Structures are given as structure tokens and as C-alpha cells.
Image 1 (cartoon, rainbow, N blue to C red):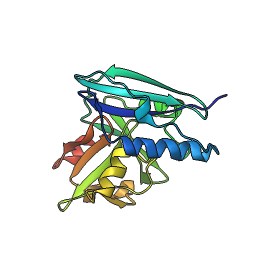
Image 2: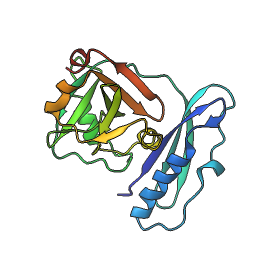
Image 3: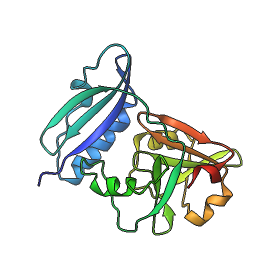
Image 4: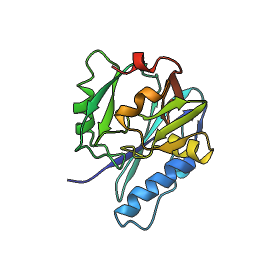
Length: 196
């Protein structure tokens, strides 16, 4: 079966944001497949000129396609902790069955917080960060190294740290991050009310 991957890029009024981080991850994925020549995203993206859009680039070792969707943010205010020591999602693959199975366990919560080998990783759609003493910390070993997370680390706005599930009581706040929501602070004070 052919492996396909994708990038999700935020487009505001015709401008694709943080394109260099998406380009870098795309090239990294293809390099892992021994691909030596890469397409330049900016040559393929011709977005609508007005409004907020989600640009989805689907690709494999040979082909690339681009789609645009009007974006409506999914409201996430609560996360259910789920444990899974087998999950692997190193690359942003179109094959998300394992993540979908974990999402189905969310109960009355909006999404799940995935714990692997006692370490906090991600939700099904976002990297996470936790707030303590005026600083934001993000798991050193996420399931997927997101582009927004990479940018915020480069900008010295995030500190990478191993965070075990037992450490959650040390933190007061939670933020989610991905290309579409950027850095979305869910709470700064009531973390225990946010984690189911």
C-alpha cells in the first residue's frame, strides 16, 4: 500500500503562514524515503485571496496535491487521559486509524491526551504545552513534531521537557498548538478541571 502524508497550512487572506516549517518537515519525511528531489510548496499553493483557509497538501514519494477548505475552529476545552504504549505517529500520515480509535475513547471530553510509556505526548490533533511559574513547557517526546511547536521552540517561547503523567499536578495551565490554531491557551489556572 502506498504511504501518503500531508501538511496542513494556515492561509489568511491569501498568505500561507510559516511555510518554511512545513517545507522542512515535508523534505524530512521524503528524505526518510530516500527521495532526493523536493517540490517547493510555494509553487503549488494558489489560495483564495480573502478569508481564513486550511490548505491541505497531500503527498507521497512522487506526487503532490493541494486542497483548500474554509476553516472553522473545533472548540476544545477538556481532554481525557488515554494510555497507549504502542502508538507511533512520527510522520503526519493520512493513515490515522490508531489516533481515531483513541479519539473514540474521549467520552464526554472534547479530545484525548495521549500518554505513552508514562510520558505525555499529544492530543489527536495538536501538540500540548503546560504552564508553570511563568513558563511554557512542551513534551520532549511528542508523537509528532509539529510545525508550530518547532517555531515556538526556535523563538524561545517553549521549553522542551519530559513530562510524565504523574507530573501534571505541578502545572496550572494548558495550551494546544498546531498550524491552524497556533498557540491556543485553554486554561492558565484550572488544569485539573480541564483534564478528565
